[in-house]
Figure (cartoon, rainbow, N blue to C red):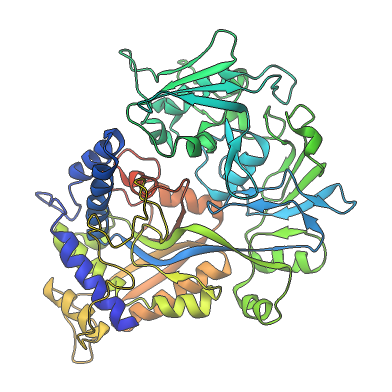
Length: 565
């Protein structure tokens, strides 16, 4: 299988590089064409043409070899016997508001360590999205079957061309402080999220909404706040999915703007998320944050003003903040936690062998991958094409089968592209299906015949072609060393993957050192581009490839690779 992966990745690079625009100087690709493609994808009304454009964008993205797909995600967690009503979805969001636990009124949980952001518009992490889904709300939400259903809205209408939606708000909505919540709050919140001064990582998700002559989003609440009218620039097949996504949740204007530190001395927005840095802020969902001991614990309590409060049975959610999966697992085993979202890597095989009924493997729609920083000094002196070749040569040394079988252990599927298997195409089919629109060769049916070339020999030949020197044992010469740092957060599974990659690259003398840091620091360091190569992962926010493609546009807040920057 390793040889097959090596060959298919070689084919991918050869095909993909034809699509990458080359910069005049330096090692960074010109990202103009990609940005233009994303804009066209989001504006076209022809869904078949849109699919074709998304395949072209995938070709360009993967041809950079900045993304090294490892496997397609699934999700593992442990939950005590007796917990019922909990559910999650393929996007990794976990819903506790309908859970019960016998006669217990408290559920003790670990999702991750200190959350990076609690402001729904500023969050871009999975654990943050889980906290937002349980303490705020959108016009729509997901039910236990993974289907969309009304939440703060009760219904909607859409005109014949699919460009104008009118959402009817649920009557009697309140913020957690008892004040009225209506469509005007959603109008303000969406315009805030789209405002560059807010610096929302996901602001690009609002780009599909049309703008008026003044540049304002065409989102309008009725005078009485009973309806919200949204005008799009093009039909959107995943509109209701967006309505369930945290960036589209409402936040209370007076809370945001009244927070200490929100404005600087000149009246400019200095800290858009200042209002949600400590416990006690106003929210709108099933729970409100009552206390927060940073880096230690959070306590959410039931919100009596939530519209569906009568169906919320657990009175309190107590979160242990830690990413040390050994400590987390010990706390669970000792009965101090009822739900944990991670398991030490060395315990997985035992849990599987025992068929432990408290160990769950859930479906996810997403990709675990490694990313190269396109601006890393390791590419200094190389052309765009040479840097891509270097990244490709290193990537084919990585034994994905070993990672899946001995580290993942829960049936993950080896990944050959960033777009996850099973993702829909927005045109009535599956994006990776073998049809006329499909341009990127991968997976069963796309693997070429094995040429017999050893993957190490292939990597060495590619590196030789761009000037690296080797001895007779296929080890890098001291004249042309390759050395860089791998950044990861400090949980056992991610560290095990990093160590496997380190060993694979050492086979040809590459010196890769590991740097492990805590979760929220890791997120911000990666986002700022302070790394050479880093572990990464992306769970889809909705079931459409644009979600996996638009995040790499130059201005995207999730463009960790720094394309076009």
